[in-house]
Length: 207
Length: 432
Image: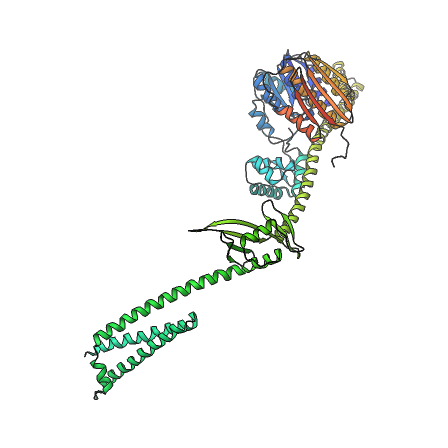
């Protein structure tokens, strides 16, 4: 039996996924945690073979960060990141953290089980792209990587100078990027842009 | 006597006239030196006389008439020596004229500098080590009088008075940190700075007075805008925090939509089954499959309804059992949301530390409310740290949240590991 640990803070989603696994003879769901940080302790004292790890978990714990730490201390554990957030950076960060697979949350049983099976057999399953999100007049694919980075910082309400310091660029460059973003999306001011961007899930500074 | 020598002599005399006349006029109109003017006019007069006589000689020679007595006298003169002498005088006059011109240019420059300084909007003053004023523009003279009520006579005394001395009525001294700033009775602000200027052979001190009124107004306007911007940012940051919960809610809603669709699909499937059943085409396995699908969907909904307020603490207890960690709570859980969130963060971190680093088997959590302040203690019985604790992501994040809510946090390592947190009871609206 493959021992599966699920990290999922939404009880509805966790119970649904638990139902998927319950009937499957190959998998045993050993525990459901609501905060990713607790997975570190759990794996320290329990045998786990595969983790279904949500990215946005309780108490602001990032599943991606914890998964990266786990890959360093327990490289033998296979991890599948699961999320419904279309944040542009998640795929890149998951690959950088050597996470085996990545799955956007859906309710179809077969797809999750298929990803789990193939991951367990040694495959790395990643979606080709993040889901396309509409932001104002623009689609998420129209933004450059740097514009997305600026947008992510903008959502936190920081000034141009603070964003510039964090990204290692000049505040004038930040201002130009914001201007381009406003032109592409059609928003009239940075606050509207920041609010819409945060709500769309395209960028997320918390996790 | 050759006519060419006379011609050269006449040209020399002409130059003599021009140079001496030029210097004479120059001395009178520019230098205002009467003696030099008279001397030059005398020379000029003599040169003109000689020029007239020489011209007469040439005229009589051309007319081929008998030389007059004056012409004969002129021709009898040693013309070569005279020519040399005339050109020598011309050289001297040229040298003198050039020197006078250069001196005038120099005098003009100094005047131009003074004029320029007087037209500066800032006050400027240079003084020697003794305090003697070397140069001061009109603005500085006026400022000195407005500020101290005295004319600017000594730079040292003036600056000393700006620093500590008495000021004219109505003048207010505003700042002495980086520069002296004064508010005049007319509302204008003036700032004064002093610095040493090294010259070739000496050092002078420069005082600059700058009108800061416009700058102060702009600064005040900018300050208002900055406050507004900070308020916007604060609201945006609050919104950003709320957004996390909003997104979770949206995520749950999306899932509910999916389940709703599943129910719709099941209803259609069931209807289709009963239609087939009526005509006798539906099989028993089909019925079991549909019942199984209904059961799964209903279980998902029932599980969701089992979620209660104690779910978090219960989940911590469940986890602790799975980790073989004896988790005990002494006291009551905090009731307000902020304190509860920080409590759960600290508990989560304490469980992680107890299991991963201290290898503990027991974690005691104390929580009490005293004097409107929550006191939390998280004590484990594991190994004590052998090296000073470097606060990483977890502990530093908790500390930040505690400090943001006006609380304090201590990590005590003797005699047992104890994470201590004191948190004033959060009252909504207090920080708005």
